[in-house]
Image (cartoon, rainbow, N blue to C red; front, side, top):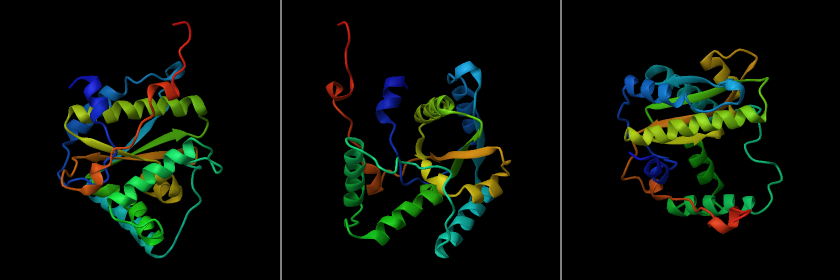
Amino acid sequence: MKVSKAIETRMTVRQFLPTPVPQETIREILEIAKRAPSGGNLQPWNVHVLVGEPLAALIGDIDGKLEKGIEEDPEYNVYPPQLVDPYKTRRRIVGQMLYELIGVPRDDLPGKLKQLSRNFRFFDAPVGIFFVMHRQMEIGQYADLGMFMQNIMLLAREYGLHTCPQEAWARWPDTLKEHLGLADQEMLFCGLALGYRDETAIINKLISEREEFENFVTLHGF
């Protein structure tokens, strides 16, 4: 698969099939993805891959806490507290598109929360991946980790797989510290669901909008 095709077909999948992903496939993807650039070659990422019983145990733990209304202090703000336009509008539009697609009315807060909680089941993906960083890292290393993750998501397409990057997991730092055995100096950045897309799921018909070239590019010297 050409890189351009992988980029064109990469999407955020929110319903996966239970079909297992071979360990060798996961290993190959991560081995190739590690060639991502990083300032000073810090390679500021550590990766935890969960399948089978460890994945089920984590999901069961989170399910129980959600049922009891338990919350944890998030590792960080996924979005800026006072999000300004055009970013605020973009977020509102994609959210509206999603909920309309799955038949959740605008004022149905329980329905929206139920869909949000699907993150913590990895949307039924058979593989859950977590990305961890040392707390000493700065904004430059966040960019490095993002490039590493993008490599993984594009390589997944080459193997016929799909992904869903999930910063929502930042809501459960204490639980993940326990399940992943993280040290105090390690912080959970985000999760990533990996698996085969459920082609019949209506939610996977969502294709988010992108700005026109002229709206985000300024050409100099042309």
